[in-house]
Length: 500
Image 1 (cartoon, rainbow, N blue to C red):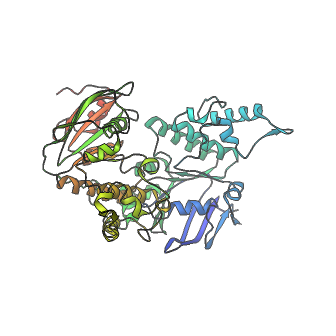
Image 2: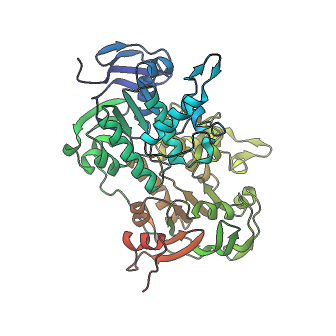
C-alpha cells in the first residue's frame, strides 16, 4: 500500500514556446493538508489541470493509492477520486443547490429523476459541511461561502480521495474563511487528502501539515510546516530574498486631485465624503460589504448615483459613464479582472491599448511600432510571464492577467489611479512589483487610491486611510496619527469611534 493517496512523478508539460512543468512532483498523504505555493506563472494551474485530467502531461506518471493512472479527461480523474474546487467557482446560479451537487450524477427512480432522495442527500452533505440550507433554492441566492461549500459537497458526493482547493479564500469574508478552515479540518479527519493552494502565508501556517514550493515550472522543496518560516517560504518561492514586503516610498503631497462630497446611492452609500491628493496613496479599508467598491464604481460612472458632488483638480465634474471618467483623468483597476478588466479572448497587445487608443494612433491608424514598444516595456517592467505580446490573455495565470490590467491603465496616463484589491490572488513577489508601480505613480505626482482587505497592505503602503462601514466613512487616519494601527482601524471598521 502506497504512503500517498495521490502522487505525481516527473511530470513535464510543454506548450508552444513554454515549458509549463519540468519534471514536476507532488505527493499527498491520506488525511493530510498539503500547502502548494508558488509565484504566478510558477505552474500551479498547469499542475492542477494535469492532476484533474484537463491536460495530459508529455512525460511523467500519476499514481492514486499506488496504482498508476492515465487521465484522458476530467471525468476519469473524478472517477479515480480526485476533485477540484477552482478559484472561479463552477456554479450554475439559476439551478438549485441539489441540481448543482448532483449534476451529471443524477439519482433516478425508473425513468424520472428522484428529487426526494437527491434533496435529502444534498441536505445531509451540506449539513456535514456546517451549512443548513434549503437545497431546493437556486444556488445564486446564497453568498460565495455557501457556493464554495456546494462545490466541496460535489467532491464529498463522489467519495473523493483528494480535493484540490485553488485559492479558496480569495473571495471570502472573515467568517466564511473560518468556516472553510473548519471544513478542511473535518475533511482531513475523514482521511481525505487536500492540496491547499494559497498566496496567503498565514493560511498555510494555520492549516497545513506540509508545504510544497514550486518555481518556474519546477519542484523546489517540500517540508513539514514547522520547518518553514515566512522568509524561507518567500525565498524558496521567488528565488531571492524580499527585504521589505511593503517597499513604501513617499511622494510629495500635492494638490487635492479628487474631492467627493455627500456621494449617495440609495441603500448602498450614505453621504460619502473624502479627499485624495497627488503624490499620495489613499487606502480604503473596511470589512466585506462596507461599500468601498460601490464608492469607486459610482465615482467612475459605472453605477448611477442619487446625490453628491465630485471634483477633479478643483473642478466639479458630472460623470455618467466610464468613458467620461477616463476623459476626466480617472483610471479604475477593477476587482473583477476577468469580468470587467480584460477581454480574455484577445491578445496582450490588444488588451494593453483598450483604454488608450488615442495615445497609440497616428491619424486614423494605430501606430504598430509604438504599440509594440510600449507593450514590450510593460512586459519587462511588470514581469509579465508570456512567450510574446501576442499571447491570448485568457491563457495567462491570474497574476499575469492582473499585470496586464495594470499595464492597460498605465497606458491611459491618468491623474487618478484607483486600484480595487490590486494584489488579490497574486503571489508575494508579484505584489512587490505592484507596490513599486504605485510608488512610481506617486513619485510622479499621481494620485493613487487603493482598496484592500489586507490590513498589512493598507498599513504598509498608505499615506492616509479612510475606513468604511455600511456605505459610510467611519474614520480618516493619517500615517503619522496614533490611530494608524491595525487595532484602531479594525475598531472603526466594526463601527467603533476613534477619539483623539
